[in-house]
Length: 325
Image (cartoon, rainbow, N blue to C red; front, top):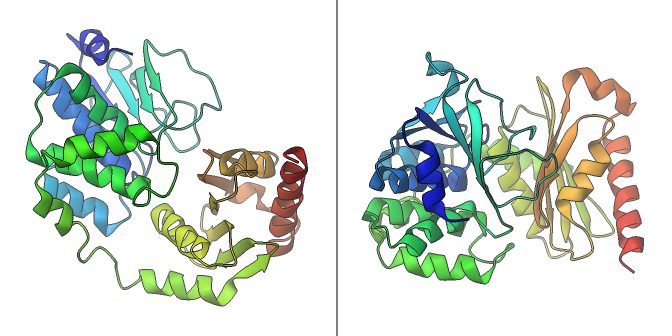
Protein backbone atom coordinates (compact mmCIF):
# COMPACT_ATOMS: atom_id res chain seq x y z
CA UNK A 1 0.00 0.00 0.00
CA UNK A 2 1.03 3.57 -0.64
CA UNK A 3 0.90 5.31 2.77
CA UNK A 4 -0.08 8.56 1.10
CA UNK A 5 -3.39 6.88 0.25
CA UNK A 6 -4.04 6.74 3.99
CA UNK A 7 -3.33 10.44 4.22
CA UNK A 8 -5.88 11.18 1.48
CA UNK A 9 -8.44 8.90 3.15
CA UNK A 10 -8.23 10.71 6.47
CA UNK A 11 -8.16 14.28 5.18
CA UNK A 12 -11.24 16.23 6.26
CA UNK A 13 -12.21 13.71 8.93
CA UNK A 14 -11.78 13.67 12.68
CA UNK A 15 -9.32 10.83 13.08
CA UNK A 16 -8.02 8.49 15.76
CA UNK A 17 -5.18 5.98 15.86
CA UNK A 18 -6.25 3.07 18.04
CA UNK A 19 -3.83 0.52 19.47
CA UNK A 20 -4.82 -2.82 20.92
CA UNK A 21 -6.10 -2.79 24.47
CA UNK A 22 -3.43 -2.45 27.17
CA UNK A 23 -0.81 -1.36 24.59
CA UNK A 24 2.80 -2.56 24.61
CA UNK A 25 5.88 -0.58 23.49
CA UNK A 26 5.59 -1.56 19.83
CA UNK A 27 1.95 -0.50 19.71
CA UNK A 28 2.66 2.85 21.35
CA UNK A 29 5.71 3.52 19.18
CA UNK A 30 3.80 2.60 16.00
CA UNK A 31 0.89 4.87 16.89
CA UNK A 32 3.25 7.72 17.76
CA UNK A 33 5.16 7.29 14.51
CA UNK A 34 1.99 7.17 12.43
CA UNK A 35 0.60 10.24 14.20
CA UNK A 36 3.75 12.20 13.33
CA UNK A 37 3.75 10.90 9.75
CA UNK A 38 0.16 12.02 9.23
CA UNK A 39 0.90 15.38 10.84
CA UNK A 40 3.72 15.96 8.37
CA UNK A 41 1.18 15.51 5.59
CA UNK A 42 -1.47 17.78 7.07
CA UNK A 43 -3.63 15.29 9.01
CA UNK A 44 -4.20 15.52 12.77
CA UNK A 45 -5.02 12.32 14.65
CA UNK A 46 -5.26 11.41 18.32
CA UNK A 47 -3.83 8.19 19.74
CA UNK A 48 -6.22 6.15 21.86
CA UNK A 49 -6.59 2.76 23.51
CA UNK A 50 -8.95 0.87 25.79
CA UNK A 51 -8.05 -1.03 28.93
CA UNK A 52 -5.18 0.11 31.09
CA UNK A 53 -1.54 1.06 30.67
CA UNK A 54 -0.05 -1.65 32.83
CA UNK A 55 3.69 -1.33 32.61
CA UNK A 56 6.05 1.27 33.95
CA UNK A 57 7.78 1.24 30.56
CA UNK A 58 4.65 2.55 28.77
CA UNK A 59 4.28 5.50 31.13
CA UNK A 60 7.98 6.09 30.72
CA UNK A 61 7.64 6.10 26.91
CA UNK A 62 5.04 8.86 27.19
CA UNK A 63 7.42 10.91 29.28
CA UNK A 64 10.67 10.24 27.40
CA UNK A 65 9.35 10.54 23.84
CA UNK A 66 6.59 13.07 24.48
CA UNK A 67 3.66 10.84 23.53
CA UNK A 68 0.08 11.83 24.33
CA UNK A 69 -2.22 8.82 24.38
CA UNK A 70 -5.87 8.91 25.43
CA UNK A 71 -7.74 6.23 27.35
CA UNK A 72 -11.04 5.47 25.61
CA UNK A 73 -13.17 6.37 28.63
CA UNK A 74 -11.79 9.92 28.54
CA UNK A 75 -12.97 10.50 24.94
CA UNK A 76 -16.41 12.05 25.27
CA UNK A 77 -17.24 13.01 21.69
CA UNK A 78 -16.20 10.15 19.37
CA UNK A 79 -18.98 9.33 16.90
CA UNK A 80 -19.65 6.76 14.19
CA UNK A 81 -18.60 9.35 11.61
CA UNK A 82 -15.08 9.63 13.03
CA UNK A 83 -12.32 7.62 11.37
CA UNK A 84 -10.15 5.09 13.20
CA UNK A 85 -6.90 3.52 12.03
CA UNK A 86 -6.10 0.32 13.93
CA UNK A 87 -2.39 -0.03 14.65
CA UNK A 88 -0.69 -3.22 15.85
CA UNK A 89 -4.17 -4.74 16.04
CA UNK A 90 -7.14 -5.64 13.88
CA UNK A 91 -10.86 -5.11 14.26
CA UNK A 92 -12.73 -8.10 15.74
CA UNK A 93 -9.63 -9.28 17.59
CA UNK A 94 -10.29 -10.09 21.23
CA UNK A 95 -7.64 -7.59 22.32
CA UNK A 96 -9.17 -4.59 20.55
CA UNK A 97 -12.32 -2.91 21.87
CA UNK A 98 -14.82 -1.82 19.24
CA UNK A 99 -15.07 1.94 19.79
CA UNK A 100 -17.72 4.25 18.34
CA UNK A 101 -15.69 5.37 15.32
CA UNK A 102 -15.42 3.72 11.91
CA UNK A 103 -12.32 1.53 11.48
CA UNK A 104 -11.38 2.62 7.97
CA UNK A 105 -7.72 1.61 8.14
CA UNK A 106 -5.40 -0.99 9.62
CA UNK A 107 -1.63 -1.26 9.93
CA UNK A 108 -0.57 -4.50 11.61
CA UNK A 109 2.07 -7.22 11.56
CA UNK A 110 -0.05 -10.11 12.88
CA UNK A 111 -1.93 -12.73 10.86
CA UNK A 112 -5.61 -12.06 10.17
CA UNK A 113 -7.99 -14.42 11.97
CA UNK A 114 -11.27 -12.57 11.29
CA UNK A 115 -11.44 -10.66 8.01
CA UNK A 116 -12.54 -7.04 7.90
CA UNK A 117 -13.01 -4.76 4.89
CA UNK A 118 -10.85 -1.70 5.50
CA UNK A 119 -10.55 1.15 3.05
CA UNK A 120 -6.82 1.14 3.73
CA UNK A 121 -5.13 -2.10 4.79
CA UNK A 122 -1.43 -2.77 5.36
CA UNK A 123 -1.07 -6.13 7.10
CA UNK A 124 2.33 -7.74 6.63
CA UNK A 125 4.11 -10.36 8.71
CA UNK A 126 7.24 -8.72 10.08
CA UNK A 127 8.84 -8.64 13.51
CA UNK A 128 7.41 -5.31 14.65
CA UNK A 129 4.61 -2.99 13.60
CA UNK A 130 7.05 -0.11 14.15
CA UNK A 131 8.94 -1.46 11.13
CA UNK A 132 5.94 -0.82 8.86
CA UNK A 133 5.54 2.73 10.12
CA UNK A 134 9.26 3.42 9.72
CA UNK A 135 8.97 2.28 6.11
CA UNK A 136 6.27 4.91 5.53
CA UNK A 137 8.83 7.63 6.25
CA UNK A 138 11.42 5.85 4.10
CA UNK A 139 9.11 5.32 1.10
CA UNK A 140 7.85 8.90 1.01
CA UNK A 141 11.05 10.62 2.14
CA UNK A 142 9.09 12.17 5.01
CA UNK A 143 11.29 13.77 7.67
CA UNK A 144 11.01 12.57 11.27
CA UNK A 145 12.30 14.14 14.45
CA UNK A 146 14.82 12.37 16.75
CA UNK A 147 12.16 11.42 19.32
CA UNK A 148 9.96 9.70 16.74
CA UNK A 149 12.97 7.88 15.30
CA UNK A 150 14.04 6.79 18.79
CA UNK A 151 10.55 5.53 19.65
CA UNK A 152 10.36 3.47 16.45
CA UNK A 153 13.81 2.03 17.05
CA UNK A 154 12.79 1.07 20.58
CA UNK A 155 9.55 -0.51 19.35
CA UNK A 156 11.44 -2.64 16.81
CA UNK A 157 14.02 -3.78 19.38
CA UNK A 158 11.39 -4.73 21.95
CA UNK A 159 8.98 -6.62 19.69
CA UNK A 160 11.73 -8.59 17.95
CA UNK A 161 13.35 -9.30 21.32
CA UNK A 162 16.57 -7.68 20.11
CA UNK A 163 16.26 -9.23 16.62
CA UNK A 164 15.96 -12.88 17.65
CA UNK A 165 12.16 -13.26 17.36
CA UNK A 166 10.34 -13.19 14.05
CA UNK A 167 12.86 -10.78 12.57
CA UNK A 168 12.81 -10.06 8.83
CA UNK A 169 15.21 -8.19 6.60
CA UNK A 170 12.78 -5.27 6.61
CA UNK A 171 12.99 -5.04 10.41
CA UNK A 172 16.77 -4.82 10.23
CA UNK A 173 16.78 -2.32 7.37
CA UNK A 174 14.21 -0.04 8.99
CA UNK A 175 15.96 -0.19 12.37
CA UNK A 176 19.17 0.97 10.69
CA UNK A 177 17.21 3.73 8.93
CA UNK A 178 15.57 5.15 12.08
CA UNK A 179 18.55 4.59 14.36
CA UNK A 180 20.68 6.98 12.30
CA UNK A 181 18.13 9.73 13.00
CA UNK A 182 17.30 8.79 16.58
CA UNK A 183 18.05 10.46 19.89
CA UNK A 184 20.04 7.47 21.16
CA UNK A 185 20.11 8.81 24.71
CA UNK A 186 16.34 8.42 24.85
CA UNK A 187 16.57 4.77 23.74
CA UNK A 188 19.13 4.08 26.45
CA UNK A 189 16.95 5.81 29.04
CA UNK A 190 14.15 3.34 28.28
CA UNK A 191 16.27 0.47 29.57
CA UNK A 192 16.71 1.98 33.03
CA UNK A 193 14.31 1.49 35.94
CA UNK A 194 11.47 -0.16 34.01
CA UNK A 195 10.75 -3.02 36.42
CA UNK A 196 8.46 -2.56 39.39
CA UNK A 197 9.06 -4.28 42.72
CA UNK A 198 5.72 -6.07 42.43
CA UNK A 199 6.93 -7.73 39.21
CA UNK A 200 9.36 -9.86 41.23
CA UNK A 201 6.47 -11.68 42.92
CA UNK A 202 5.20 -12.84 39.54
CA UNK A 203 8.67 -14.04 38.55
CA UNK A 204 8.89 -15.93 41.83
CA UNK A 205 5.50 -17.54 41.27
CA UNK A 206 6.53 -18.63 37.78
CA UNK A 207 9.71 -20.20 39.08
CA UNK A 208 7.85 -21.98 41.89
CA UNK A 209 5.13 -23.32 39.57
CA UNK A 210 7.03 -24.18 36.40
CA UNK A 211 6.22 -27.58 34.93
CA UNK A 212 8.03 -28.88 31.82
CA UNK A 213 6.60 -31.54 29.51
CA UNK A 214 8.57 -32.55 26.41
CA UNK A 215 10.12 -29.10 26.01
CA UNK A 216 6.91 -27.20 26.80
CA UNK A 217 7.24 -24.98 29.87
CA UNK A 218 4.00 -24.35 31.75
CA UNK A 219 3.59 -21.94 34.66
CA UNK A 220 0.46 -20.76 36.43
CA UNK A 221 0.58 -17.35 38.06
CA UNK A 222 -1.95 -17.32 40.93
CA UNK A 223 -2.25 -13.55 40.94
CA UNK A 224 -3.90 -10.73 39.01
CA UNK A 225 -0.99 -10.04 36.62
CA UNK A 226 -1.27 -7.50 33.78
CA UNK A 227 -1.01 -8.74 30.20
CA UNK A 228 2.39 -7.22 29.58
CA UNK A 229 3.98 -8.85 32.63
CA UNK A 230 2.60 -12.27 31.69
CA UNK A 231 4.20 -11.85 28.25
CA UNK A 232 7.56 -10.88 29.76
CA UNK A 233 7.50 -13.94 32.02
CA UNK A 234 6.65 -16.13 29.03
CA UNK A 235 9.83 -14.84 27.34
CA UNK A 236 11.73 -15.49 30.57
CA UNK A 237 10.59 -19.13 30.76
CA UNK A 238 11.40 -19.62 27.08
CA UNK A 239 15.01 -18.62 27.81
CA UNK A 240 15.52 -21.88 29.75
CA UNK A 241 17.68 -24.32 27.81
CA UNK A 242 15.13 -27.12 28.30
CA UNK A 243 12.17 -25.11 26.99
CA UNK A 244 11.34 -24.33 23.35
CA UNK A 245 7.65 -23.54 23.88
CA UNK A 246 6.26 -21.62 26.86
CA UNK A 247 2.65 -21.42 28.04
CA UNK A 248 2.14 -18.98 30.89
CA UNK A 249 -1.28 -18.23 32.32
CA UNK A 250 -2.55 -16.04 35.11
CA UNK A 251 -5.77 -16.59 37.03
CA UNK A 252 -7.31 -13.14 37.33
CA UNK A 253 -10.58 -11.68 38.57
CA UNK A 254 -11.98 -11.48 35.05
CA UNK A 255 -10.72 -14.85 33.80
CA UNK A 256 -7.54 -16.61 32.71
CA UNK A 257 -5.00 -14.78 30.56
CA UNK A 258 -2.48 -16.74 28.46
CA UNK A 259 0.84 -15.85 26.86
CA UNK A 260 2.49 -18.35 24.51
CA UNK A 261 5.97 -18.23 22.99
CA UNK A 262 7.42 -20.68 20.45
CA UNK A 263 10.92 -21.33 19.14
CA UNK A 264 9.74 -24.39 17.23
CA UNK A 265 9.22 -24.15 13.49
CA UNK A 266 6.61 -26.92 13.64
CA UNK A 267 4.49 -25.11 16.26
CA UNK A 268 2.80 -21.84 15.33
CA UNK A 269 2.02 -20.11 18.62
CA UNK A 270 -0.95 -18.20 17.23
CA UNK A 271 -2.62 -21.24 15.70
CA UNK A 272 -1.86 -23.29 18.82
CA UNK A 273 -3.56 -21.00 21.30
CA UNK A 274 -6.48 -20.29 18.96
CA UNK A 275 -7.20 -23.99 18.58
CA UNK A 276 -6.78 -24.91 22.25
CA UNK A 277 -9.00 -22.09 23.53
CA UNK A 278 -11.68 -22.07 20.82
CA UNK A 279 -14.27 -23.81 23.03
CA UNK A 280 -13.51 -21.73 26.12
CA UNK A 281 -12.51 -18.25 25.00
CA UNK A 282 -10.28 -16.87 22.27
CA UNK A 283 -6.67 -16.54 21.25
CA UNK A 284 -4.35 -15.73 18.41
CA UNK A 285 -1.03 -14.26 17.35
CA UNK A 286 1.75 -15.24 14.99
CA UNK A 287 4.45 -17.89 14.66
CA UNK A 288 6.58 -16.93 17.63
CA UNK A 289 4.23 -15.22 20.05
CA UNK A 290 0.54 -15.29 20.91
CA UNK A 291 -2.00 -14.60 23.61
CA UNK A 292 -5.39 -15.82 24.69
CA UNK A 293 -8.14 -15.39 27.24
CA UNK A 294 -10.84 -17.48 28.93
CA UNK A 295 -13.57 -15.30 30.47
CA UNK A 296 -14.49 -15.94 34.08
CA UNK A 297 -17.91 -17.33 33.14
CA UNK A 298 -16.31 -19.99 30.92
CA UNK A 299 -13.71 -21.35 33.35
CA UNK A 300 -16.06 -24.09 34.57
CA UNK A 301 -15.94 -25.60 31.07
CA UNK A 302 -12.37 -26.67 31.78
CA UNK A 303 -13.42 -29.04 34.59
CA UNK A 304 -10.27 -28.12 36.46
CA UNK A 305 -7.29 -25.85 35.90
CA UNK A 306 -3.71 -27.04 35.56
CA UNK A 307 -4.49 -30.59 34.35
CA UNK A 308 -7.01 -29.70 31.64
CA UNK A 309 -4.96 -26.73 30.41
CA UNK A 310 -1.73 -28.69 30.10
CA UNK A 311 -3.52 -31.67 28.57
CA UNK A 312 -5.25 -29.46 26.02
CA UNK A 313 -2.06 -27.73 24.94
CA UNK A 314 0.00 -30.92 24.79
CA UNK A 315 -2.65 -32.70 22.76
CA UNK A 316 -2.60 -29.90 20.19
CA UNK A 317 1.22 -29.68 20.24
CA UNK A 318 1.49 -33.37 19.34
CA UNK A 319 -1.20 -32.97 16.68
CA UNK A 320 0.63 -30.04 15.07
CA UNK A 321 3.92 -31.87 15.29
CA UNK A 322 2.51 -34.93 13.49
CA UNK A 323 1.05 -32.67 10.82
CA UNK A 324 4.51 -31.24 10.08
CA UNK A 325 6.32 -34.56 9.83
